[in-house]
Length: 180
Image 1 (cartoon, one colour):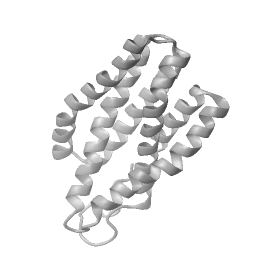
Image 2 (image 1 turned 180 degrees about the horizontal axis):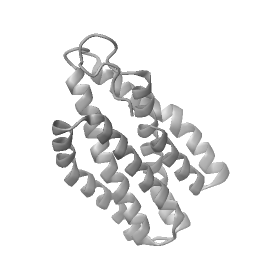
Image 3 (image 1 turned 30 degrees about the vertical axis):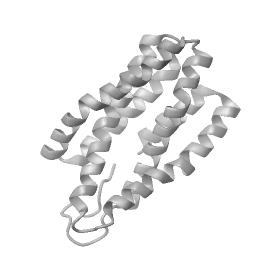
């Protein structure tokens, strides 16, 4: 991920187009997985409602517990490699989910993707926060790129899901995270 064209924060555009495209891709991929995961768990894996329901709090707890560590890392280290590595972990978690039919592996994929997402979104939002003085619209640019993922990624992914099934939809979400 190329977080910014101007690393010093002085002058020039705040965010590169590549940065904004990356945000769009990972945001859209996350929305696809959030939509498809419970359907996949119930319809394809045949998980009970209890096990399907356990996936959400496990992922949310992982994200909740790791965000402070993501903030610590974003404060101490360069955010670009943090975001890049986190996007890879996020994509690996998305890729892990559809390759199995067992609850523990799906759970591991969910936890892995939420761990990557925790560090990724802290790094991205910290970057916007650091740029706010230079560009007061930094947060709105970030939010706009996130919401664009709904159109650019989610709409085609839902069509892919309907036409080809869950595995290609998860693979596409993983590809979005890897490309970002």
